[in-house]
Image (cartoon, rainbow, N blue to C red; front, side):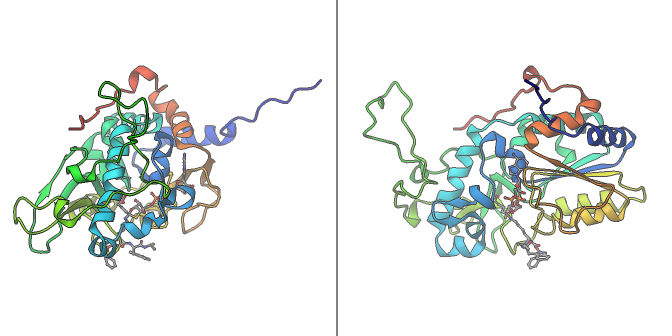
Length: 320
Ligand code: BJW
């Protein structure tokens, strides 16, 4: 019986040409999206993971949804804070952090708000969090400037605690109670009253809200300024890696074109072959189809070596 060799995950010719280019590259950019954290167990926005109960996650990520039903939107974000706190960075988060430590001219623009890149030790000055963080909270009142960073209290207020399965016979004081998955529409969602939601300690009036960027909102000005300064430098950009993002949301998606306009070759890592950047793929580009958690460490191995389990030290936050 004849055996055919398993097809390598990354076509060897593509791996070789990418790594040769990476070795020659100085100014490198990465644009990250939700697919990077998919292997850590966190859902993406579009496609199968994009439904939270019966709600489109993209619809919940809007100021309109918060104004209409702040309780529901807080339940969505409180659930995601809990999930993110309990998730672990994956090898791709660590590989990108290692590349940043090796190359000070490498910057990463992340659309992710889950805190996994910081926890993987990605140097903060090389990590631009374009859409904020689940662990920042700010006042929703227009005239109040209250902002709290690194708030890891889970749940942020008691009313947002996940319901537990009271009928579970294993549930007792000694054993961790079984939390119910409220992203599943078949699980009853507890009622949350407005007065139990987190309030601003500064103005005492406004509701607190997650410090993330919703549709129609401006992006953090300092973050955008840093990126603009970096891209506007006279030197060319050598490479942009577009990892785990559908690259459909602006201004993030526009950085692919900005980098291309400064000479960058584009390398996409995505499980979906159809999720190429809006401007399409050029002949010199690479499309690496597959799980970022597997592909990214493989691509970067020539620069950073192997990511071993003992290298994956989680700068975990303690949930309070
Ligand atoms: C894997 C994988 C695995 C899965 N391995 N891969 C120009 C043109 C048109 C519209 C606009 C424009 N400029 C601005 C706009 C409006 C708007 C916009 O872009 N709309 C689009 C829908 C067209 N942009 C804005 O409103 C932005 N603000 C702004 O521009 O302000 C100025 C302004 C104000 C007023 C008027 C006009 C201008 C703000 C955008 C904020 C986006 N916010 C969110 C929520 C953040 C908080 C939260 O997390 O809840 O950010 S929405 C959501 O989308 C989230 C994400 O960061 C973002 C991008 O999604 P991402 O990460 O790409 O996720 P997915 O799910 O889409 O893709 C995952 C990918 O991974 C897929 O490709 C999978 O195949 C892949 N994958 N598993 C590798 N294991």
